[in-house]
Image (cartoon, rainbow, N blue to C red; front, side, top):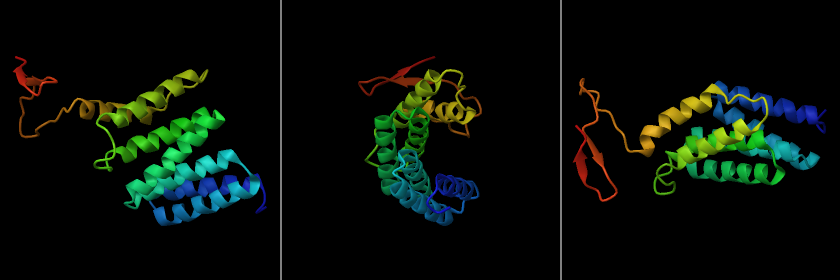
Length: 172
């Protein structure tokens, strides 16, 4: 069984369950074993899934730069292979990691990743974009526009708009 695709599928599933349970060290081990299995089988899908899983684990373990590299590699490989669903997964991981990369990521980059993931999901006939993709986008839109909410202000409303020149103009 160790040389089979089934073994790779089991490793991927075990890694995914470990991520869900927040047992990131165990998940990391599963995804590293999946990467080895992918090399032995010359299976591009397992290589990409391993990199996506490693990105998730490394991010959760406080290593955002390493996580970013794994997720970027996964996205590049998925694009090369035309693996649309794996591209979507890699883009979601990159969007999650984005906020934890001070000085690396550009403002609005997470939203760009999520928009690309949504466009890809909509390009698959019969596929409905997952709810978590819409939720992630909803959380990123205010960040892209620099919108913040002061919880102490119970009468929240648009008070001013900052334009490209850095000047705030009254919006009331």
